[in-house]
Length: 634
Image (tube, rainbow, N blue to C red):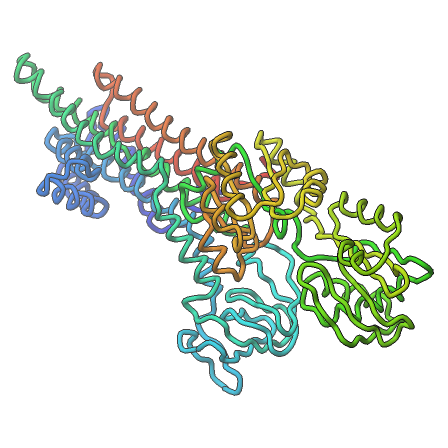
């Protein structure tokens, strides 16, 4: 696949045609067969000029500025040296194969940036404002303007649906293949596809501030931000390249000046060493690997803010999770309805929903939503509603015979009413199961108990199990009560539980984990977990779509709330690290072998450049594999 893609490029076609011309001439030269000089000189000069002028100009500029670490300088010296020795075929081979090497490098980086370019392409450049006939450039559209999006069009800017409903494909941002239903009041994002219905959208962010723009900007910055391996190799190359120039010079000077050896053969060996030592493959191995891995992550809805965080994920030994909105959905739901003293489930929910309709609390909303499962009942009306913070609510039901009602925690209800042991046992059972118990009582008797659960994400257990397979320990750090945290840990398979923690106490526990395991990732919702995310080796924010706080605080952001991507990130980090090590090792090993051959006079200019280009091709191909890396196939 890679080779076929390469040869679709015009530049590679020209290089391939040139190689087909000069390789036979190089082979013939080994048998002292050459073209006539009036043909050979103009032909080779034209090839060197066409493919090598930028290299030679760059090399001469580096020589003038005494920048001996520049690779172009090595190639320029080797090319002029080959011409001086009369090895015109070798001079052309040097230039053409170095051009192949550079073209491979360019192709690798361009291909690994494709995911980002696709994101940019999906962002519309114009939008249709409501009431207008012609489209307006998105840069001229302001917050609170209303834009019209027809079926099949991409949504131009972040906003809120104010009219219509549709299925919207958000895979360009979240990586999720299934489209989502969007109704009035729901958020939509630039670059996502309106699959079906007509939508009117109230703009909430200008073009430069959209979620898509932020993803593209941060990902390009991440790709440019050097990893630790890249920094090391660049520093190494800055000393290595001039060192090679010195060694090559000494290989000619010492035998010729001090040992009275002939100049030409030793000069030829010096040029061979220069070519062998060219650190092309060494220098490009890390950036192409990082580009490819980040491109892979981006198309899955993962925003990685730097190559160093990808490398760190490969070293992770433990992952700490927040509970609410991370391992759980953060959306309370009624799991149990237990009526007491002769009431039915429908009657109980009708009475409780009437009181909870006054509250904005998420639990209240879940109870009201649950009452809708009984369409035949009518929600009761209340008067004299009163909310007691942290305890519950009270009020007078206008439907029930006994009007005064208390709804809330067991302790709150017990302040006014007697509660039998059966109710206490139910509450204790709920707490052990990680549920919140809501007690309902009127003036004379207990009417029932509701169990409220924060539903565990379906992928939580799988993600934790996969982490354990990777020998990664897991922990919960939560402000919730120990019973709820313990229940979730048991259901999911978490190793350690630290509950009832304030934000500063979470940081303390996270530091303890870092001291114990050294490399620890923290996964949270990115809003109230900011201190913990910044303390961890890698901070990973859940549900970052639409949340600027999450994107800013985290090192890695999961745009799609998919915990199953955590093990994938560990594997991607590990294979990125191993790919960099393999590439670096292969480049050094090949150079060492051919350097040894050169020192004993068994190498040549042509063989050296073929070896250098060969290892460069292997390095690029090996790095580009990460763009399509899939844990389901590995």
